[in-house]
Image 1 (cartoon, rainbow, N blue to C red):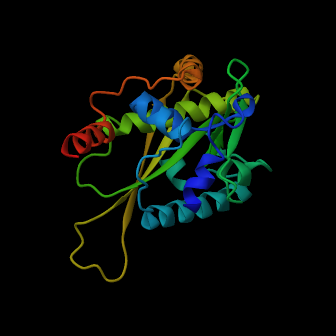
Image 2 (image 1 turned 60 degrees about the vertical axis):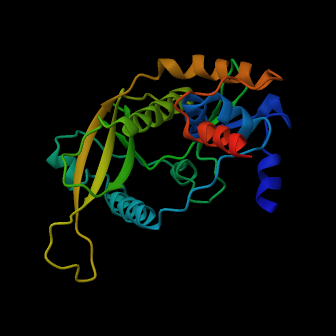
Length: 249
């Protein structure tokens, strides 16, 4: 009940003029407008997912490692290996953008068209000698396949980065269209566990195009202002589950 009350205070109905909208909720709308409406307008959220403590540990250690080179204003060795001419960006607001203070806001900006307060919690930012920012996201995985961005579920990764690029541009920064994903791949070909996981780092660039973000925000506002449920995505597993439950009941 406590969780539901907290969620209810964040509904669009409560204060539409200064409504906070996270990167995750934008992606929910793209996946299924009906689920988005149920969540943000009516407070009926999707079932929560368990946390990912191992992924969080990888994120924490990577941030600590890149922060070491941030203090030195030198590129991390993996950046040198991939020929990336940049260094970790030093900025006093970095802890806020990363949400190290756990206010669940991150980098944020008010969209002039919709009034949405668009928010996104980032992993890192690198800066080129020309002063362009590269948005960086850490990803933990474990696969024997080649690391790529072509898997279907990884299209959400690309959208995530493009939303971050959109936010930082509207915060007044000069943002490169090239963002980077740092994949930490846990190796499974070792003969013994020996109380440790070994990782291999891979960096993949993504040439982002954030031109879709503003039009989608306008669509989202129109949906939230309606008094009727939008159509469900035919491929939405949550909506199909609800439909089947109704049939059984």
